[in-house]
Amino acid sequence: MLSNPKDGCESEVKRIKHRAWGCALLVALMAGCASYQPLPLEPPTSLKDAINLLNMDTSKRSELPKIWRNSSVNVGNGLDEADIVQLAILNNPNLQAVQTRLQEARAQLIQAGLLPDPQLNLSTDIPGSNDPALMSAYGFGLGFDLKSLITRDARQSVATKQARTTYLQVLWQEWQIIQQARMLYRRALIQQQQIELTYAQFLQTQTSWQTQKNALDQGNATLDMEGLARTSMMDAQAAWFEAKRQRNKTMHSLALLMGLSAQAKMLLTPLTQGLPSLLAPPLRGKALRASLENINHKRPDLLALQSGYEAQEARVREQILSQFPGFTIGVNNLRDTGGVWTLGPFINLNLPLLNGNRGNIAMARATRSRLRAEYHDRLMAAETQANRLLSDQQLVFDELAALKNRLPDLDILMRRMRQALVSSNVDMLTFTTLQNSYFSQRMKVLMLEQAILEQAVALDTVLGELPLSIKSTGDQP
Image (cartoon, rainbow, N blue to C red; front, side):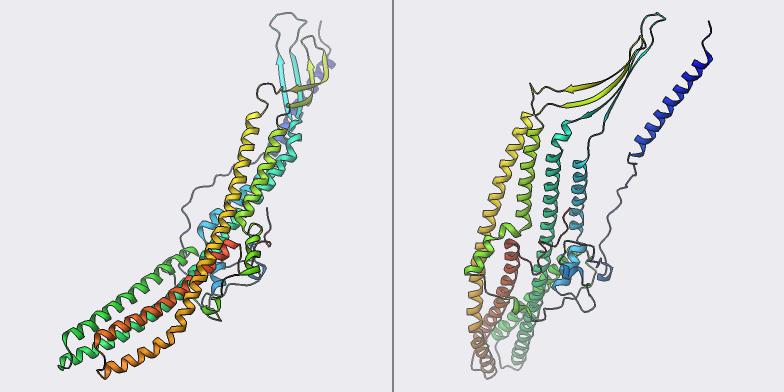
């Protein structure tokens, strides 16, 4: 008996509809997928050969102080401390690599907020007998994991706090670059003064030697007098060249910090008030106690440790929530081998009898304890380091004050000794010894000033202070 053509047509229409729905579902799934685009590993960008080739756009750097974001870097009249700092944090190669971690933190934050995809189950059973009354069985199921909803809030809390931790860690790296740039800038200015002082010493010793050499040629001086003057001149010349080498090393380090090549020309502009304006006495009394008490509220690394601990606290909560049974609900649409269609719900439940996520909970708690201990250790180390720097700074400051009080008398004595040498009222050995001591004391002044200036930068780092604070202007991810 032939089948009804109408029934055959309806069956074909159903098959076409099923295929159409299947194609539509496949297209919808593919539309939500990301496409792959290769990213070749290209050679790194070389260092810039000129300052004007550097990035000077501060408007897009939200973590910078507003006064820096609203001002342009002017390199036409030389670079002052603020210019050096801005160019360093905009162009430092290492910092550019560190800042890519912010993109990872944002991606993790997005991932934590996504809901799980529904689960689609397809099955078929083909009868193994030749019974014409039997047909192939089909099953369609659609389920959703409810456990992910239970832990979603905790996951988002972990990701949010971890993103803040990453932001603060990157910010701390920027602080290191800022303080290093300030320190190198101040060191370079002091070293320029050292070059000028050693050159002045070389010129004076050269004049003394030339005088003794002429006197020796005329028979008015002895060979040992000329030899003392020659040795003093050679020592002064060696000190002059060493001072130039040290500044050259500093300038190369400063150039690399800003992404400049060694061939780039760089002119440093002294501070308007001069470096002595930065030689302030160390903190004392209430100001010192206030700074020490607020270290954990200002330093990005300590804030990062706090945020990391809070993220781990949320992770412990997440792992505890994860010990609850896996719970998936859904609906099945089935056709058995007899051609009967059924529709009904289903539940999948994981029983936490053997695992129960106990291992992950133990590890999360152990990590939390470790982070707590690391934070306390870092905080105590910061306070100890701050007190040590303040004590050292006070000692250097007292030594500098004592030396400057005595230096004017030494200047007067040195002028008298030169006149006495011309009048042959003092021997060359005595004059050379006093002259070397005189320049040594003046060099000591510069070294003490350099120590105070660099200690001030180190102390700012330890206390979480910057000339223009950036601790609250950043847009966190």
